[in-house]
Length: 603
Image (cartoon, rainbow, N blue to C red; front, side, top):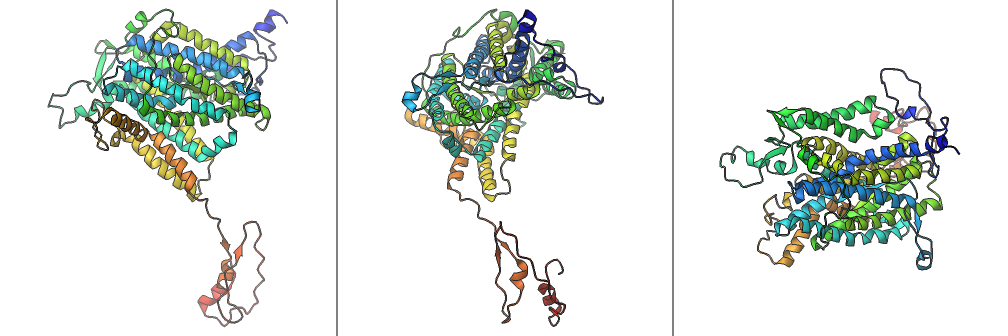
């Protein structure tokens, strides 16, 4: 094999032009067939790097969001160096975990311990990244610990340690038969859980879009009845994006976020396959460009100091957070790991579908077991790598579907690209300089994709079933309710232990711990909503069958003049044919009774 075949490949087999061809909706274009590259195909190095870059760009937007939100809005708003480290660590960790997930290593001695060979990794193109599922729990728990006087970085370390302990649950599920997981999490529970996660995240994205999370939570201070009192301490309802300070929801901030959405629409209409796969990062950079060339009374929306001060090279453990344990967050984290277990099963199943692989084979079962094991192990490794739990990323399944490249080589290249982006600290510097409003325009779209996935799952259910509708209605009523207004159980910002469901300012530390655990669970919509759905699914009986009654026999008279008994017709037996009525049937009956004596279509 020559250098051309090694680096570029056979031009008849590998068509690079079709990936970069623009779409023109008003022009009739000939559809070009795209070659499919199976999971074990040794694609050339250039295509491998190109496909890997597509996967990396498809997930970068989601990867940077969770660490940036936690460190900017929950741990330390002004600590740019911490935020940059968190982003770099998340990128590097995602690259390492993705390569573990894709590789599929046999676990030594597993056949002796469990009676079958177990694996680490799914062996298919399934990449991993920081999970949105854990974001609400980390936010609430860290805020509670800060209210108790615990340093924010120590609080984050406690959450990492607690997450490691909770991750053992997913490892336990990974060695169980798949039927037990499906029994605990049937489709009705899964769809409700994903919908509630999407609802919670979309609301958070809206706060960023309007200017920032903290100022959004403080907007009540601008109410006409209290605005003139001028006695409120920080935080302020004024949002700062770069050097610009405006009130939450100002038209300028909304416009910056909207520029991201406009670009998303344009890419969807005119973009090539490559652009559509990278739409989130392209739209984010466009919004960043608009913010960079704009100003407000001479003040810039972009503060370039973050880029100048960023380290040129960085790696894991440049910053360290002492691992600990926070009991009140354990149960909510266990619920979150249940959710990610089901998400991983769904994501790997989706990878098999778009990769043209059979799902009724032993290889598929091995991939599910190995994928769940890797998901649990990687989430625990993530804590050691100072980042939040990792799980499979479903949006990359769309990249496979569009590019028709399921080769694992592309996934390994994706992991290399993510590590490369994470090591160069200036990349994190650029990301932390993006205004919150621009970030909000991107995150609300990403978060709403989670909601759309939940609705898609729900569409496969029998929505005519009274039982299914009841489970969905009650679970969503509670889950969406506490998501939209969590302050029945959650303390408002800068007002600890004041929620009326359990005022606990003077309680003992043990009672505060129990109270905080309940607060996290009850105010996290997908936690309480998921538990309610699981409970209802376990106790509600199946829908009763419908008996089809022959209404013509129900009203026909017996020979003795009494009313006929209704006749039950089985669903799988055709109703017997009616005998044609005689011409003088019903002749002596009154008008109303005569019509009832006729067959239904004649009456």
